[in-house]
Length: 137
Image (cartoon, rainbow, N blue to C red; front, side):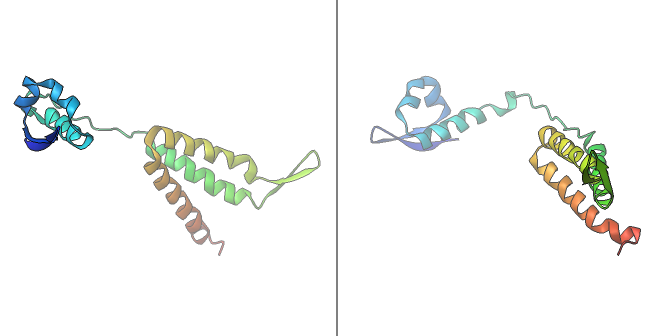
């Protein structure tokens, strides 16, 4: 890997050998050339690097997704049921719905925002689809 870089107004061909012989040259180059030099340094002697392929295991994503969808659908069903506590009338869904925040928080922290977004969208479409399946229409 090689590239011409500008060192004090002079064009020099940057090679791994030049960096090995004169490591101070990296202090004299601009940011873009330093980025290239770092990449060249990282790609040098790739056959000596021991790569390990780690498969990410998402073994709890499915149960967490099912629990979140279950909580969301249950809270929608219970939202039509009124409960009276000490003179306050609230819906039954208010007891169950906070669990959805807990499951969503766990999914976001453990599996990342992308998976959490997919799970929330699947919960949303499940909630939209559930009245048609159960005959509420």
